[in-house]
Image (cartoon, rainbow over all chains, first blue to last red; front, side, top):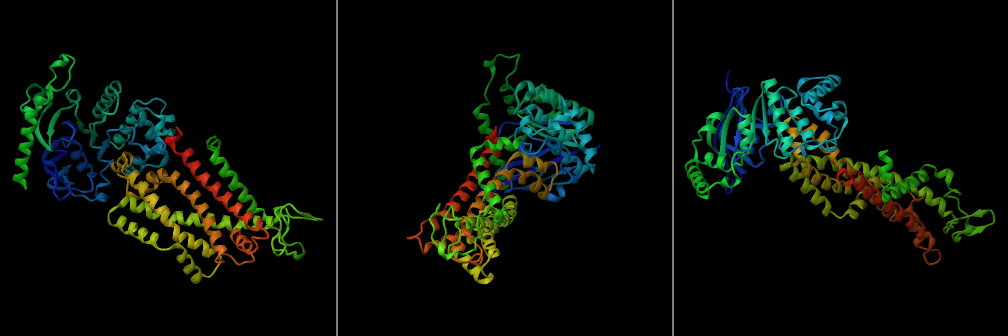
Amino acid sequence: MSTLLAIRDLDLTLGSKPPVRLLRRVSLQVEPGQIVGLVGESGAGKTMVSRVVLGIAPANARVTHGSVAFAARDITHLSEAQRRPLLGREIAFIPQNPMTALNPVERIGPQITDVLRMHLDLGRTDAQDRALALLREVHLREPQRILRQHPHELSGGMRQRVLIAIAFACKPKLVIADEPTTALDVTVQKQILQLIRELQRNSGTAILFITHDLGVVAKLCDHVVVMHGGRVLESAAAARLFENPTHAYTRALFAATPRFDRPADELKPIPAALTQQLNEEARVLDARDA
Amino acid sequence: MKVIAVLRNPRVAFGVLVLVVLIVAAAGATRLSPHDPLEQDLLNSFQHPGASDGDQSHPLGTDSLGRDILSRLIFGARPALIVAFVAALFAGLIGTALGLAAGYFGGRLDAAISRLVDIWMSFPSVLLCIVLAAVLGAGLHTVIIAIVVIDWTRFCRVVRAETMLQKSLDYVASAVTIGLGPGRILASEILPNVAPLLLTLFTLEMGIAIVVEAILSFVGLSVSSGVPTWGGIIQEGRLYVNQAWWLMAAPMACIIVAVLGLNALGDGLREAIDPVKAR
C-alpha cells in the first residue's frame, strides 16, 4: 500500500516584511491505518501542519516550499473549492475545543447529517438513521434525544463524542485530531482516547494525532514525530522512540513529563541551553534556505 | 413556552404592547376612529382636548379646520407602520447581504463594500432625501426608498462586524473541514448566529424609519396632504402652536411612544434571545 499522507520539505511563511517562518522543511508520513503522533510544545508548529493539510491555514500564510500529497495526489495548492470534496469525506478533523466547535444555534441532528448528505448523497431519513447509528457508535446514550438537542445542553465530553461521530461519519481515510482531549478533564480524556482507538480499529482509518501529552502518545501511537520551532527533530516508531530517544530534545521532553512511577522532584524543565541551541540551529537553517 | 419566557422581559412586553396597539390602530382605523379624519367642522375648530360640544366629542380636540385629532392620529399610524416595516425590511435585506459577503470573504470585496459604506455615510442624508423626492416625486414610496437608500449601511456595518467575529469561531472552521462551501456556511451556520442581532437592528430601524417618515411629512415630501400623517399633523399644528398646543403635542407623543416602544423591543429582544445572556 502506498503512503496515505506524505508531507515533504514543507515551508510555511507568514506575512512578508519581515516574513516569519512557521514551518521549516517539515517532512512526515502517515501510512494507511496508522496512528501517527505529532508531539511538541506550544508553538512548535504542530497545528500549522494540520491546517495546511486541511486548507485552513491563516489567510496571510503561504506554503513557500515543499508539498503535501494525499493518496498519491498533490494537494499542496488546491483551491478551496477543489479541496472541498476531500474534506469530511477523505480527510476529517477532530478539533481541540468541543465547547466552541459546534454551531451554538443549530441542533445536533442537522450538524451530523450535513456532512452525510453532502458527501454520501443520502436522503433525509437515511441520513437521520445513519446519524443515530453514529451516535450509538460513539457510545452516547439516548441518541434520539441528543439529535434534537442544542450543543449547550451537552457536556464537553458528549460534544467531543458528537464531533468524533462527525469526523468518522463518512469513513474517511485520514482523521486529523488536534489535541482532542486537551480541553477535557482527565477521566473524560481517557474515555475519549479509548473511543478514538476503538473507532480507528473498526474502520482502519489512519490518524494524525497532534498532542503535547507523551503519555497519550505512548498508549495510542504507532509512530511519533517530534517537532520544535517549526521543524521535525525526530521521527521514529513509537516503541523505538520511547526505548531509545536519539535527539537531546526528545530526551529532555521525556524528562519533563510527569509520571506515576517517578517522584515529582525528578521532573526537569527543558534546559534553556538546549532551547537556545535549537533556536540557533533554526537561524542557521533560515539563513541557508533564504 | 419560549414566547412567554421572552415576553416576561419588561422591555419586550412594553415594546410588543406598543407594536400591537400600532398594528390594531392601523388595521382598524376606519372602525376605531370616532370621526372621519378628513371631515371638516369649521364651527368647532381648535376644540380643547376633552371638550365635548353636544353630540360631538373630541377626546384630543380638533385642529384649525375642526378635524378630529384622535381620528387623524389613528389614521396616521398607517403610513408610519407601512414605512417602518417595509423600509426596515429592505434596508435589512440589502445591508445584511452585503455585510455577510464583506465580513465572510474579506479582502478586496470587503474593502470595496466598506469604502462604499464610508462614502455613503459621509453623504448628507437629508440632501439625499430631497434629491430623491425631486426625482421620484413625493409619496410613500419615496419615503421608503429614501430610508432604504440611506440606512442599509447601518445593517451592513453591524452585520459585517458580526460576521467577521462569527467567522473566526471554531464552529465555522469545523464547517469548512467537513467540506461545506461558503454559501452553505453563510446561510446555515453564520446567518442563524447573526439573526438575534438582525432582529434587534430591525426593530431599532423601524423606530428610526418612523422618525424619518415624520420628518419627511413635516417638510411635505411624504404622502399628499389628504392623507393624515403624524409629521403632517405636527407641521399643520406648528402654525397655531400659540393657540392650540395639543395640535403638536399629540402627534409628537405618538412618535415618541412608538419609537420608545420599538427601541425597548429591540433592546429587550437582544437580552432575551441571546443564548449566552439568557442562560
